[in-house]
Image (cartoon, rainbow, N blue to C red; front, side, top):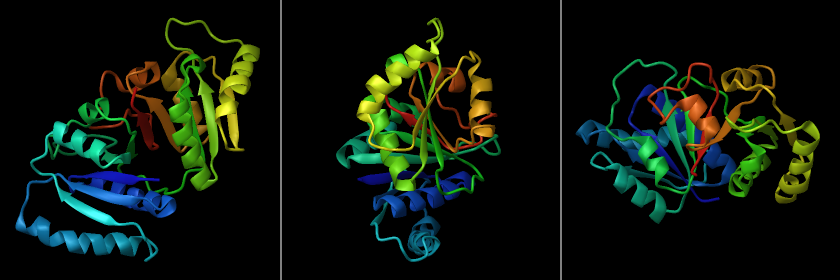
Length: 259
């Protein structure tokens, strides 16, 4: 796997996301690129070496990946997109609040970045402490299931020996799929593209996605929710764009794939 990019604005949620990014890099053998988004200061520069030492200490000395810091304090969204493309970033990671506790520390609009790159964005809720995935859930209308999304999710599931749950929700305005047709579509089209044994399928009939997500997280124990940018499921949960906070009922990390 390639390089993981971490958005770092020195906030509490960014520090928590940093620990998560380190855990993934350690597991995947990926390099870690940290974008320092805060305005440059002597104190911030002095903290860089200390921070890298702390990163390695949190990985119990096992982190073999390269860790690189970039002063991105003057970067625009266009600069970040260019960097993501040039460095062939595999995954972007950003901490996000569960409720607003401070003003946005940087002027970077992460939604704009996601709209113009080809790699997914992983959002880590502030205070979320679990570091391994056990149940990865892909919310999708099976009629629009993406092979590239499945590839990344199966790669992640294989790293953690996690279950991959493919949850069908009919998009707004489209008829429900019958259980037999949905199962045939999954087994005949999707399973051919998956190389992971622990893959499961549900055909949700619930039209209220908020209720369905609550069931997935609290009853089916999903600890990573996968969505596709600007598709129906993303729009129902996030609206037109990613805000500074996660939707209230989502308490687990969310990985959002480009269209």
